[in-house]
Image 1 (tube, rainbow, N blue to C red):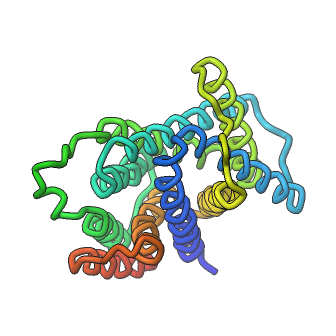
Image 2: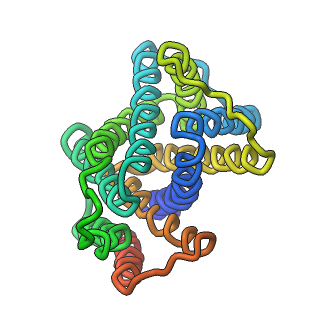
Length: 289
């Protein structure tokens, strides 16, 4: 199997994992808070990756440079997701989702400039089709026309989150190529959990979920496993492919999030969203050439 096809599969894995995680994360953030949702899901994800590491191989031979990059990457990821969930709390879901998709653009720019990665003409067209289709899928134009909605609420936080994610994935590719995708995912997850514990201690944030039902906790922990799986498979893709191709495909996660909303929240897909989904699928197909 070619590196391009493996990169596409890795991107699709990230798309489905993050799409499901963002759906659950958005729902839980509004009910129990973004930091609690993030902490417990990340703790669950770190346990999952630990078991994955035991089943496979963990590289403990870590260069000093990588030892420095891992905690930085952990902080970038944690702060980015907290800001993203905060954006969901403050703003309109469709606007926040559309803004968040800029993380793939930032990653592509950094990969082009810093890592000197390039795409073929077909791949470049396909990537732009994916980004355009995702914009159509994410935005609800009737909300934009509604003057009662403050479109800027939560956008500032989400823009910063998108930028931090863009930086994170460059770090993650460098780390994954050096110590492997399993070790990268595991050490970054552990770093995120430690950061959240310190964040809770010094920020006086309660992490305990009061009166949590077994169903709620199970769903949060399950969401964490989905997100850890998405990070794992994207890191795997980065070891054989390039961030400039893997991450734009992963950014199509909005399709999965919206389909989940259709299934569980009984939302309806607009004609523009349906067109956007078709454009995304066509764009993903083009990236194979």
